Length: 195
Image 1 (cartoon, rainbow, N blue to C red):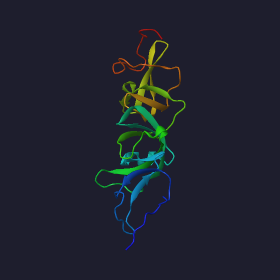
Image 2 (cartoon, helix red, strand yellow):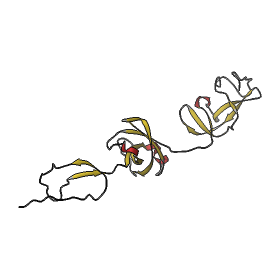
Image 3 (tube, helix red, strand yellow):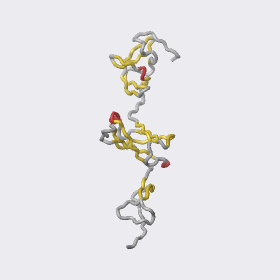
Image 4 (cartoon, rainbow, N blue to C red):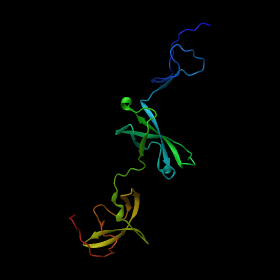
């Protein structure tokens, strides 16, 4: 049987990432010879916790940091969300598409993704510790003319140390953030440290 050299054309452009045969080795029909990848754009697969699934949408903005490149942040978008939840981890897979400038992201790298689930252009943000739980609901105390005034509030977003308020407070109001547990509606208060 006569063997001849052949020129192979890849069906896609990219970089040779794996070679399955050494030069001169015999290759059988249907057996892969090379692996080619185009990683000018890369796909990152992230696990979304079940309680957050309804907030993550296709097109959501994503910020990614990689263990191998800790000083760089990459921006991407959610391209696909799995319709099923893993019954052990209680997470769903989401695919994030990232641009790869300079080809510094390599397939197989690990990292972390922060998915922006909501965007607020204007919100009253206060320390979460200023919010008190009462029978009538959540309240905060504000200072008005030297008196403590209780205001019922509706929390839009609790981010741990801070909370965004949907209703009950306006920009410019002075929220009592120290000693609020010991004041009552109408108590005398004074501002310490200036306004």
